[in-house]
Length: 492
Ligand SMILES: [Fe+2]
Image (cartoon, rainbow, N blue to C red; front, side, top):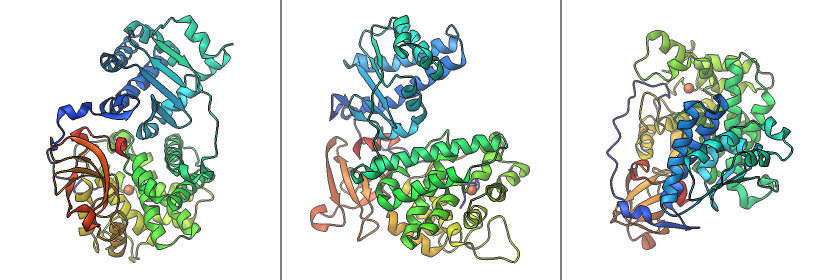
């Protein structure tokens, strides 16, 4: 029961159900002409745009890597053009939009690209039909420019655009009115995303500082943790939905934030004392910070670890506690939580202690959140488990690895089928879990998105614990949305 638990190798994922027929892909989202598939394709588009900017920043314009990145971006854009639509992208603040469709999940995944595009004055980019690969190569020179280069030009990015004719690419800045997002309750979803991206920035910065042997800033760490606490207290459901975000490449960063959100949500069911939640938030956010000094090759290894490598990984709680001890201003209970998060409820974990002493409550909370998030994430050495399977293992670990009372509260909080899970209903319909059942952890409130034939339907929200309205529907099990080409965020 640990995120390092390579012995707990999961069974191979079940074969994804092919319930969604190909033709249902063409069902439009009803949002400004882009189909659900075209909106999902935006992730590829953004990844190739990011890769082009990166290639041009690293290499001269004539380098083959730049031409290759330009060709790959051109190919993705061509898919849209062949389907008769132009590609308008907008970047501002922490958001990216395709047309007028906010790409909520991509806004978190591509936060660096959004910041870069905004900084160079390319907040609006439209790729029109008729585009050539040569234009995309010229576009590389514009998009790969440095902020200070652009700022030094008299007309900013317009000067660069005028130098390189690109009749089918329109680039301009977007003017944005900055608002205080924390002051508007209706925008709590946006505030939640801002807290998430703020935490991502912090963790990337911490890793850089640790690998360069530089000291950490307690004020930045606590400020980020407080932002998570505030958002969990104000809109727990929006934060729990975000805690389902995963990244294979940046597993540790996303894992630490998800564990912090789940820990704070669980901790706030015990106490809403701000000092307690602040210490818990810092401890949870930094619980794996000791891994940031472990050799990257060891962390990413797909084969069994040698005993020396295994010892190094098992040292991460002690290393993490030492790092935070050296950071003036971090509470002692946050350090305890980092030190003890793998100790296990039955004290059979690591590091061991003599005489043995009960794990601190914050350590026991983080251990539950850590176990669940690690199991539902894909790692270099194991596949992700479905949410209901992971929840079942958490329940089985009550009283051994995990505190049984906290496990009960965790299941009460998330239900057996946590928010954001894609589930198969007893009727054969497919639904997305919106919130846990208030009366029965097995009967959540769901949004039905596909009928039993696999065709998408107009979404219908239904509280499955409402017997009359739900007409006896129940949840059979969780499904793998990637296997069915479903992007959950499109339906939330
Ligand atoms: Fe850990």
